[in-house]
Length: 77
Image (tube, rainbow, N blue to C red; front, side):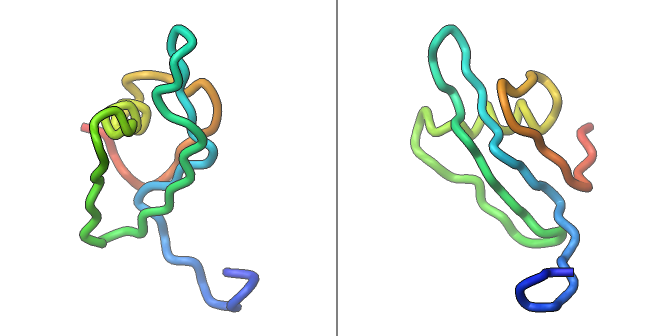
């Protein structure tokens, strides 16, 4: 239940909380907070070096985050 509006919160397909990844002193992703509801059309766009590939690798469990966590109803292949 959403405390502010009093409505039920929709189930999230993907949620991230402070997700970050550092490698060799380089920050590949910093403090990503994301909430994607189930069944939307969702675009994942950004310039080169924005952290899109790193985010996908973190969500799929291919690499581990330096800080933060992710959750959701997604199922990696």
